[in-house]
Length: 402
Image 1 (tube, rainbow, N blue to C red):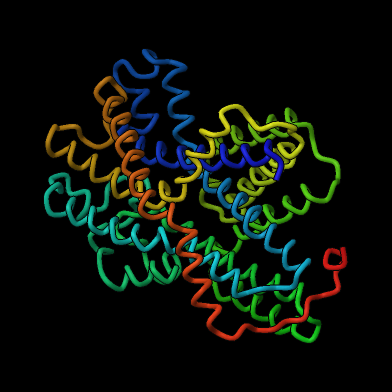
Image 2 (image 1 turned 180 degrees about the vertical axis):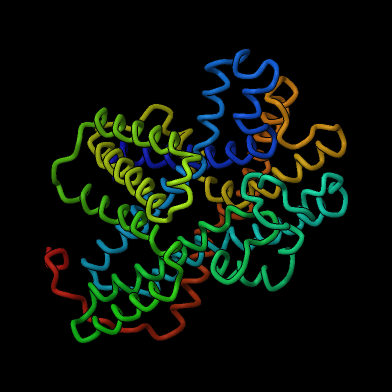
């Protein structure tokens, strides 16, 4: 992969994780924009700075769309290319995906329920853990304490959150991980059908279609966004025309701003297909930015920093919310810094402190979890190699003949 594209992906990963964290921190700490602007000293006092703050910290959903495209690009695109060249290897695919996801997910589930238990036991004066906020705050759209149980833990362990169970405890962001996992599964079955011997293709394709039908449309529809990442990988490696980086980045910036400005429009927020159309347009624009980044001859500035920050972006996504909530609950109970307060000096100080503390926590945790993914994959590879492999004749595709 060219240095320019590699560093753009690193930048995208860590920046998307940051957008999610600050989105949730702002929702927990600061009042929404309408309330903040109408308060004494609100929009009139802060003007463009207040608007910029709320605009930037409102891009959490867009960040998830970016993550889906990146996942399709890095996982789906490279896997399909490799399978077309060498034949499908489901064992290696399962090992790579399971080690990548579960090396960090299992500790995240345990740590999340531990932090929620601490908050429930010692910092629940606000009732945040035992009552449903009105209106809902961030991803807290259910009573947290009602989901702190073994069935919900097992449901999240087997990626059933949002399908058969609620997300575990306060960790609402886990909804997107379940979606991504099932996109991995559908893709693997479909790609196996495309790259295996002709006599096996119908069975694998049928299994892929069955999985799509079994899951809710609200889950599988966004699989198209993930698939755009796969197609973008093919585009980048095809030698076809790609836009100039300035054009690609500008198109993405415009789509990002347009998506953000549609927040709160009832006709979009309450309509599944309208919401999907918004995310589809954003994913196409980000795909154009990815393709244009592949034309960069050199790495982006601060490439080493982008790489270091990207290295724990997955940990940040999985671990941040229970920690954020505990910090805010403790601040509310111990210092009277209540949830959703005005964006004054005190509110902004809590917001900044919460983000910094959570990032320090996530980085420390990543040293014990995400950083050991290669070791976990090696162990799983060794275990799976002890079992007989399924022998599959590769398809005679142009890629496999190259």
